[in-house]
Image 1 (cartoon, rainbow, N blue to C red):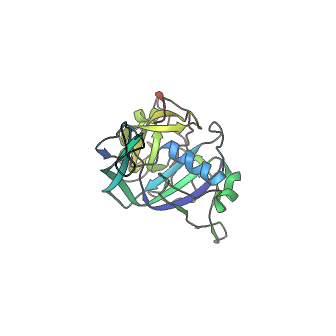
Image 2 (cartoon, rainbow, N blue to C red; image 1 turned 120 degrees about the vertical axis):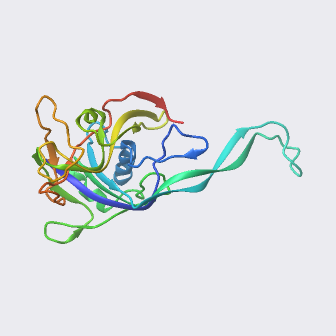
Length: 267
């Protein structure tokens, strides 16, 4: 399988948990699939077909902390405006409300896409690259190509293997029964186009750190995959990734429509 690999860095980013609105804004430790779709759309300059796009990634950050930010709360109001405009009706009224928000600092996203033909787009994005919110500016980091020259993106020939490791990523819910490692969370999977902007949610397993396949040779490997019916799992492996215990990074590609658990209109 040929895949596009691109490395993206952002000094600050935040992936708000959408079901927490009042009091404090929590952040996922990994970008949701909907964030990946939005990032790719920004690069291309249009909304790609979600049924034809699959992705895998490794995501890391140096630190996580809270900071204050302002929410501008707008409500409908009646009566009159204060002087000297008391002859005008008051329609709305706003208030500034400080809230705590979680941020991730010095983050790195190693993104793999099943669309190697999009390599030129990442060298010349259509819109500003952001990772998370519209103000979370990001940049593509040059990586050496097979000839040792810096390139903003590269095409990698992945191989299939039953021995590998996965690290710092999200996995679809069916993988929950394969490993005891990781935390199960509900993430926005895909956000549809305007005006309805319907949101599809799906459960993901957030894996922080490194876990090895069931057939791993890595000494002291913990949180290994669990075999199902005695059959090992085969993953796509990046031959350019770092080796640990003689094994290289495995990638579990997923799309934007699998295992939806609820569909809601966006707020």
